[in-house]
Length: 213
Ligand code: SAH
Image 1 (tube, rainbow, N blue to C red):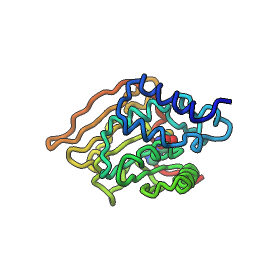
Image 2: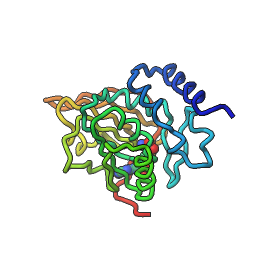
Image 3: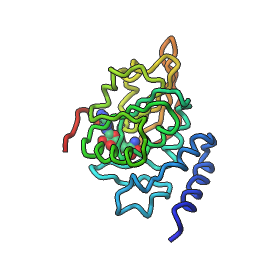
Image 4: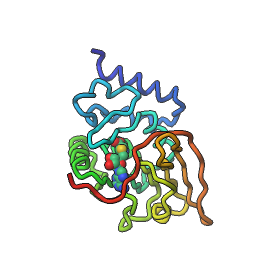
């Protein structure tokens, strides 16, 4: 079997070829061991550029999508960031290398528990996470300079726009029909929002309420 390092280098080259040029983003993706976030049955595919199942009918996104979303956030290392949909914790781990503090919300309690164990193992101490309904955001901690939503919403969620600082950026997949989802970059301005379509994607839907088991 090829060693993980050479597979990882190949993946980083794939991301560059896919149009991701930000060296901080590529550096963060190089530092996070994706195999730790993948169930045993799929570990051999950890450095392939594919989405993989993580249980509970959820998936960890394809690395290129993680990289493009992270790049579109234009993160600064002093920023306070909110993620909706912790899932495996992989996207969160990448973000944690690029911002001051990450708040992450997951509705499926057992997924969050596993993600939190990974954060401790990797000593990612700047992540605060909770089980909850991310469609309500995290009002006690708002405003956030950046928000990333990793489950598809029907429309740009007004509640989350309210929790975004003026000048802030949110990246969110929009469209609950599996075959017609677009990644949208939203900028909050003094007057309202400006949006940019980043192209087609495929995410699991954002679901309201929490699940304990
Ligand atoms: N960022 C994740 C991708 C997870 S897939 C990763 O890197 O692995 C999307 C996740 O969003 C799922 O785990 C799903 O349970 C969660 N989710 C869906 N609706 C949600 C909601 N309303 N609040 C919080 N999490 C939600």
